[in-house]
View 1: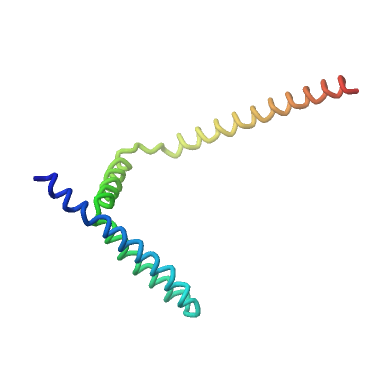
View 2: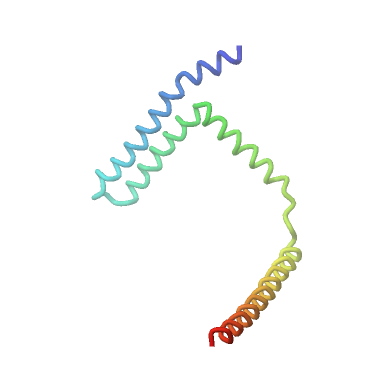
Length: 122
């Protein structure tokens, strides 16, 4: 029975995506048509049309999957153990030290190879 519900929902998904595309096109054309109006009104109009387009898009199977992904990623972000300030500072100092060391090594190697090439070329 669940498969039939998914099939019925996906049957209208293409129509919903066409509506979303038309809303986006309407927003672009409307923004161009009303280019003489103040930017505030145009931005508010674009936001309103964008919200409506997003609401229509979230009614599709892919839209629901995207919302599910957003919810799951928010849950995963809460599980992250963030480093302390001291750990961050120590790691940053190590990275800076390694970068400086590698820069000096590469500069020395470049100078040595440049000096050898100048001896060979004359």
